[in-house]
Image (cartoon, rainbow, N blue to C red):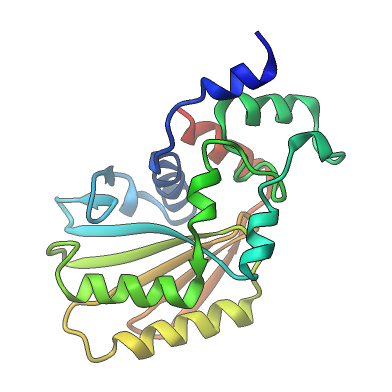
Length: 211
C-alpha cells in the first residue's frame, strides 16, 4: 500500500485529540482538581460533581499566511526523526512533537484558527449568553501553534478581563498552551502563572492523547 493510500485511511477529523490533550496537561501540571473532567460538548470538558466546565479552542498569533504555511509536506523536514514522521503519518497529529509540521487529521483544526483576541471575544460572548450551560466555574483552554511571551500572555489575560467585566457569567480561568509553557490566567484576581513544559512532557501528552 502506497503512502498516499495510508494517509487517506486516517480517521475523520474531530477535536477529541485536543480535548484529551488539554485534560492531560491540566491534570499533569495543576493536579487532581481536573482529574474527573470528561469530554462532552458545550463546553468540551465537564466535571458535573464540582461544576467545572472548560471550553477548548485554538488560536493563531501570527498572520493567516504564516498559519497556513505551517501545513507543509513532511518530506521537507530535516529536523525530525524517521520515527516521529511515521507517527505523524500514522496518527495524523503532530502537536507536541513538532512545531512546524502538520498532521493531516489536525489540518482542519488549525486551518480554521482565527486570531487570539477574536476567538476570546467569541467565547466570552457565548459563555455570557448561556451557550455553555450553567457551571460554578468556567475555564477557557486555548492551544497555540506559536510560542508566546509572558508579556503577550499577560496582555491577553488583561484584555479578557476587560471585555467580560460587566458580564454576569464569565470565565474564571484561562489556560494558554504553546507546548513550551502553560500560562494559567486567574481572571478574577488578575494573576498569571507561567509553567514551563519540556519535550519529554509533550511527548507523553501526545502519546496519551492518542489513546
